[in-house]
Image (cartoon, rainbow over the protein chains, first blue to last red):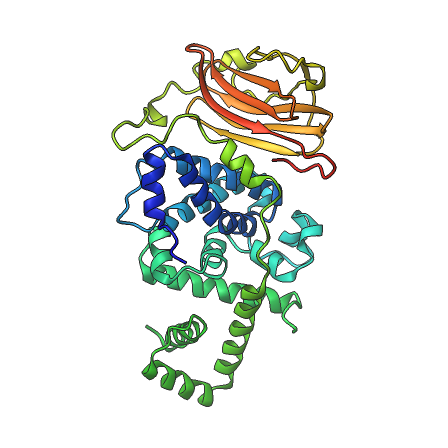
Length: 181
Length: 210
């Protein structure tokens, strides 16, 4: 199937064809929603962030530089909006991996209904910058190069952060007894 | 780079499927020589497999329609025609008009009472109410005003709940159409320009938005 490229759809949208933008939304909405969901662990917030992302993309479409991948641009906006949503939460929701013995873990601050999956809880226990690389690599299927472009960081830094994030996740899973198969 | 860094890089390269031939040989040598490397590799591989196996959720009902119908009326601006940057705008210049600064209000409209033939009539009146649950939501993210407008309640008697912050006077104009669709417009009071328009709907029976 010969799908129209993102760039072609962007050009058509800017030429006044709103249906072309709808095609872009349809193509990327699920990935954006899932990325936001993994960053926020809240369906309502993820829904709002997804809507905001496409609104921002539409408003700034004229500024899109076609020499870059469209999805890198949209994913960057998605991560930034998710991080803004996290920052709007109460300070206690800023999650750190390490908690003193006996203190409620970060998952205690979240909707327990949504935390039945240990891995989801472990992801939420990561700091936002680590969570972002996990989301980009494992939920958005981004390469190291894509991640570096989206996060505007050197590839070496991105790899180092990803490796650290995976180690933190592994530790979280093992110490909380979620690692068993 | 320390040997531990090298080991980690090799393990992660294997997980990401970017291991070269010589790197594969080096990793195999390390795995054979050191049980702790094997444990590390097994743990990380298992962790990443669990990550990759996590289900991708379908988007909520009505989200696609909410995105599309909530887009601004105007076509995207081309480069060079952008509006003034946020930082140079008179921030909260008109905030006093909205209860002393930050407006986060919830204005509920008993739309069921409106005459659906009164097209174009501004309907910015109502009582304060809190949304019990979101059914269909339009995100507003304009220079002048941002927040959300939510249609909630029963399909036959929907309520519009706004949660907006604004830097200048704007009106939220709603109109209940005969087909059950609630048309929402964000209007600049100074120029009477429609800044954003959208349609919200609570689906019959299932309660999801469109």
